[in-house]
Each structure stands twice: as structure tokens, then as C-alpha cells.
Length: 161
Image 1 (cartoon, rainbow, N blue to C red):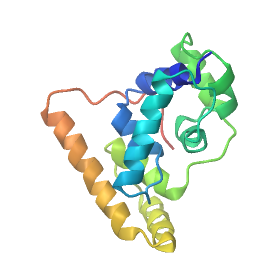
Image 2 (cartoon, rainbow, N blue to C red; image 1 turned 120 degrees about the vertical axis):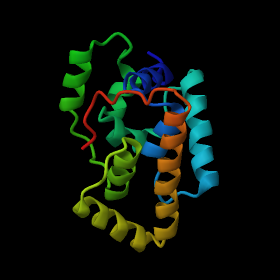
Image 3 (cartoon, rainbow, N blue to C red; image 1 turned 60 degrees about the horizontal axis):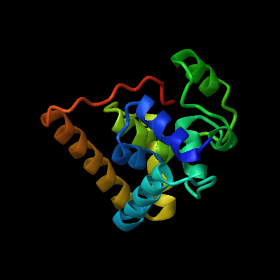
Image 4 (cartoon, helix red, strand yellow; image 1 turned 60 degrees about the vertical axis):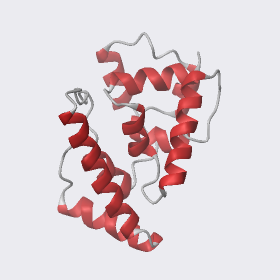
């Protein structure tokens, strides 16, 4: 099975646009150019017959599906129950604090004070607090724009935490 087809299928199943998905998995400390590179690599992955990608390490905790399963199994025919079961069995690395907060913002959900504090501590350690705050505002702006444009914000069928 083609890795790109699996990634595309799971992304669409979750109701995420390619841009929204890039916000979710790309490290929050990335600047605009690196985030754009991630978007371009994701698009390339979805349309080409690749068997591996540097993005898998970042995608795995967000999708909650192991990289090995994404690379070897055909996920495009799975039912909702099968997808939920697959995700429930995920034992890979958890999302880091910044990724959790960014995913909450993408879902339009306020992060808990503990999540926010942990994320800001991580951003401070990396020296990227300002970039992270700008990213959160950009995500909020994008969500408002999508909502005003009348296009539905895709349903999130899986809990993120």
C-alpha cells in the first residue's frame, strides 16, 4: 500500500485540511519557511509513491497510528470502528506539550492551564515563545476565516488528548 494514500485517507477521515494538518504535526517552534517546507513535503508525500518520509516521526503522535502501520497496511478500507480500535492500540511516543496545545487550538478548544504552562516552558527552553504565540494567533485567525467562508470545519472524529 502507498504511504501517501494512507496519510491522505486518515487526514481526510479526521476532517483536516492539508494546511490544518501541517499546523498540527509540524513543530510549533518552526518559522514560516520551515512550516511551508513541511506543507510541501506533505503534499509531495500524498501524491507520490513514497515508502518513507521524514515527516512520519512528527505525524505519528498526532495521528496516533504507528509509522510501521502507515507504511505497510492498507488503511483506506477501514471502517470507523476499525480506525478507532487501531488508534486505541497506539503505543508510540506521545505528543509533546507544544503539539498538544497547537492541536487544541486547531480544534478550537482552550488548552488547560497545565497544558499551556508546560507548552510555554518548552517554548521558553527553545527560545521560541514569541513564535509559538504568533502561531496560536495565526491558527485562530485561520479558523475564523474558514468559518466565515462558509466551509465546514471538518468534524474531529477522534479525541486529541
